[in-house]
Length: 199
Image (cartoon, rainbow, N blue to C red; front, top):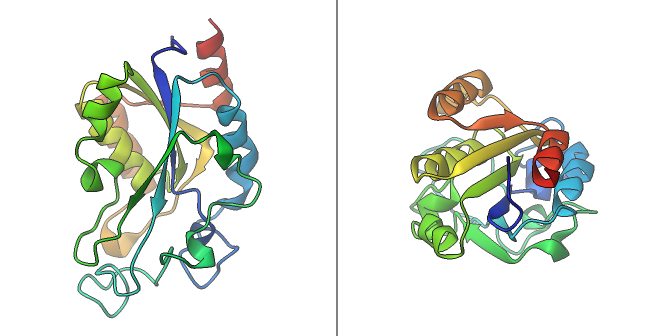
């Protein structure tokens, strides 16, 4: 069960650049349609709500033609692609943690760019974290993995998230879920989170 006084919500990269709203960037199938489910989570009585925001410079190492040569330019700082999704209740965010802003450093997880995040949550009295957003098997997964390894009870709300396989980077939805389950991450629905917080 989840205690509202010690459970936080982490909304990962719910940004236009990861949806069909920006088709030239890095659209994840179903990225736009998760907004109502994320908002349903945002309406729940979490102790705190954090969000991550991909915030890349135009020459980030992961972009095509750069060092890693993996992805089209996406979520470039101060562009429409970096903005949160339309209709998202971003006013509920207690803090926005930007990541990927160093051109020479890849940061899928909030914990990669902000290594003290887990300690910050612990100091805030948090023992459980519900994760949702984009992409389920990439930035959501790496955040969930790191938080689970740090000792948190981690729930990943699949119906408030959208995933995509990226073979060139070795990132697969089935593989990530298998690893997450092995670590003890709870894959769940928004309804299950809602019920767990009410009990």
